[in-house]
Figure: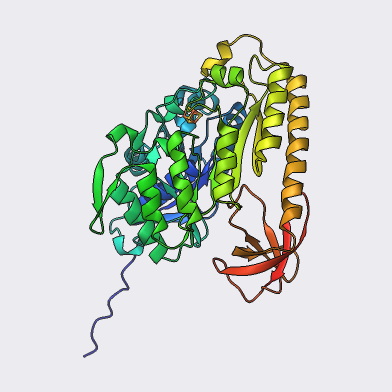
Length: 449
Ligand code: SF4
């Protein structure tokens, strides 16, 4: 007797969520966490609007330009797909989003992972059988495999007058140091060669938990910037510190760079150099004697690269203040600098300050700043020619036969790159010595050493 033919089981198609991630690396980490949760529950991630059953837009709300970009992205997603949930920084102001886009299904604020998931469940039924084992231990990441952002805290307890991050993200909440170190170790085991430490104020790490001590691999580590750096330094990969404020204890991390445990790179958002402007900005950490400190850091770690961001045209900034700023970047030889024209961000305290700078003057100062910075950067690049340096390969360049890589002085996505010849056999994440053969204003050209 022929056995009855059983129909093949009908597997329901996994619901697909499209993700649009806007904003800074911190927002990117939030997106990664959300994607990890979605995949853990059995949702698929759709690569485009057309293939998605629902689109999640992770927004940025820091500057007016970012708010506009976020609102445009929401509009585009609604037009292309129709089912849209909004999260992220701009989500802290649901009325703005709902007014511009009444068709949005739900709005949640920054790092409200539970609320995002709840909104997804409401509008897209979760699959019946979650395949938890599909999710790697490291979670799912949006950055290439060889580098990863490591978020050590949420929020910020400072109150800089131009900034609405604390309003959007709340006060500082530090992750326990052993959790951060365990995550970093997993990332390294999964092939990550470069860790990028991010937060709103990396030097304030642990202040909210009174630097609570935890144990990791049998050793006690305080939830503190220096201990964290020491732990990360033990993992044997490049470790970059971003958003470090020049508090006195930053000096203590310089010996770790001298020993080669931490990458000789400090991202310090100085924002300005004039005492008057810094006071009006209500910046944390005093900046007097900062030039002396930078000189001392460079004495101990000659290849230290300093990246920073600055705001020109802050309310009350005089010609003299601006000249102080230019003198500062010249003297400090800030290797990499981003410069922004002051924006009168909605809800920022600085809106109420007197003596706003006219737009044309802001623009003029911005151009002058960029000119000086280009000269500093070009001098720096020129000085590298002839040296041999380790670079980390990011991938294939646009020109045939050229690989794109970075030196220790360059963070991904924001800094310069090195174009390397004769390295096509290498793969992303390889770290190799190269000889620098040429330079333009920012980027370097090299051949394998
Ligand atoms: S330190 Fe100042 S600029 Fe940075 S997030 Fe906190 S309040 Fe904003």
